[in-house]
Length: 231
Ligand code: HEM
Image (tube, rainbow, N blue to C red):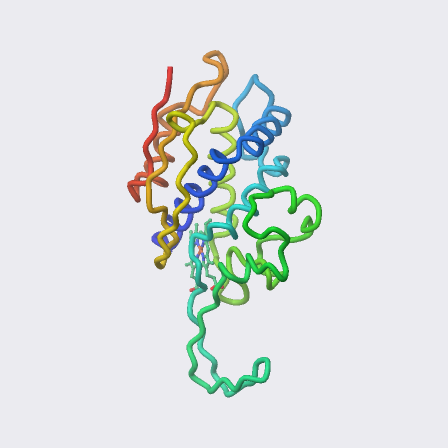
């Protein structure tokens, strides 16, 4: 349970940060929303997360683009059945290709573009809990991921704190390399390099030790993190 949760959560966080680094307009909108909801006088609380609707859309969009687990957990048919005219004998093992379904151009417009706005407009009623068979970031049915609420809150909380407290960029403003290593988990081939600059030294922040702890648990775990904080 813990292994299933650490790897998927860290991979999702890494891809989300990489997408934000490569899409400055989305990063700026995320920061603007956090600034409006939280203000400059205090740090982000967990209770703020329900009001950060743009940030929720960012995560809804990053998960299908770079799914932590491209395939579902295996299923096995217990009786003979017919699906779309195909005979499936009892005992057949099935893996659902979540990555392909969630970026099917027959369903999604510009499926490879990073457009969180689609979850505020056309797909605003889509949620992540397996109700739409063309959108299954946490799978669906009885074997759907049991860690959804924890994972979403952890990632939203970290991204909200980063956007609120830091200017984040890559060294020399180079785009992040987005090559995926499709294995059981969808790891990045190259680690992310990011520079974090405090936006205001007077602004109360999630303290650095806490932030370090999150990074260590979620990113260092895979040697996927490399960052500098200044000043
Ligand atoms: C963003 C983070 C996460 C993503 C994207 C994710 C995604 C998934 C997906 C796609 C599945 C397969 C579901 C299916 O086949 O229908 C799954 C299963 C599972 N997840 Fe997650 N997960 C995440 C975080 C977590 C966390 C935090 C935990 C635990 C604390 C967790 C525990 C599990 C377990 C135990 C299963 C297997 C369920 C079974 O075999 O029936 N996951 N997850």
